[in-house]
Amino acid sequence: MSKGVAILGSTGSIGRNTLRVIAAQPDRFTIKALGAGRNVDRLVDQVHRFRPELVAVTDARTAEEVKARVPAGVKVYWGEEGLTSVATHPGVQIVVSALVGFVGLVPTLRAIREGKRIALANKETLVAAGELVMNEVRRWGAELLPVDSEHSAIFQCLNGERISEAARLWLTASGGALRDWTRGRMESARVADVLRHPNWTMGHKITVDSATLMNKGLEVIEAHWLFGVPYEQIEVVIHPESIVHSAVEFVDGSLVAQMAIPDMRIPIQYALSFPERWPGAVESLRLTEIGSLHFHPPDWDRFPCLSYAYEAGRSGGTMPAVLNAANEVAVEWFLRGRIPFLAIEETVRRVMDMHDPVPHPDLEAIVQADAWARKTASYVAEKGKVAR
Image (cartoon, rainbow, N blue to C red):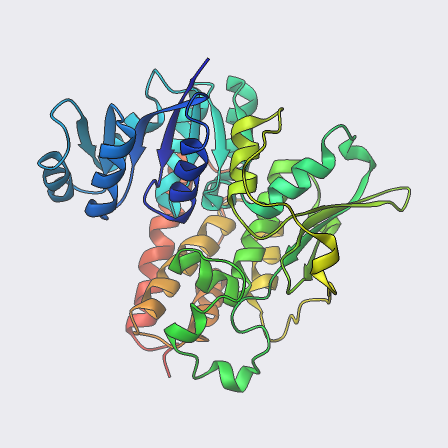
């Protein structure tokens, strides 16, 4: 029986790869709803190919443009309520949450409250509101399956195992585009340098986060909530080849790792097919062709954002939401050429230092903390306190 799928973030990298997976499994899935930002051309192409019943975009002007270019029967909505309509479509069993940033939180929460399977690629949902989200997952009996390659790897390694017997989770990191750069050289890093990722093709925001190691820090917070493991048992290791996607170390000394070529279609398909595995995602990994695999510890001095994320996670409350919001603002300013690369980490540090976290926040407190952090981060950057 075909399952209905909604994709939040259909025009981004994860969304496009999800549609590639679904196109290869036409008898298993039907696209019911798509949510996107402002990429009208790409969204319109997707609508004509996959024929969803409903689409949603960021704003009213974009919605009008989309409406004029899609078949008459397709409903077009906009804003948070529009994205929520995508996530709660009654014909949908699986919601792929792949929006970039805090904007994905509320629609994902609404889908959870509908008891749907959530294939989660929007890391900000768990970073900003992990305690709230996991409580809602348990309350409403929803499924939350990771799409990030690292968390999917850990999920696969733990399948059939007792989490109590896991001594440590190992999150692998490519190191990003600047992994071999000195701090002095990073001061003059251009946007083009930072976006030149050696292994993965991703959106701009996540590629910048990869270069600062903030992405890995956010994944540490995600792993804490997904698997219920203390931060002391979550380690990061730099693995330049991106073949081992993460690993679990067990109390008996065994280390179980998941390996594959770096292609997001593998974890996407597994989140859609679980508990089954289906053929045809990508080509197989050829062990004899790999050559050497390398692992080394992260350089905490060159990449302090990783330590900021651990600090925010341990502080808890609204601090992770503030970390995330300040980082989103700083990355956007960098991508626009308004602050230098190293000002990203400085902005995050200053905003965190100014925040007094609220413990066990509800959604309103999280939204307020997010708004405060965005305003404060913009103020810090605007006044040139971190610009050089």
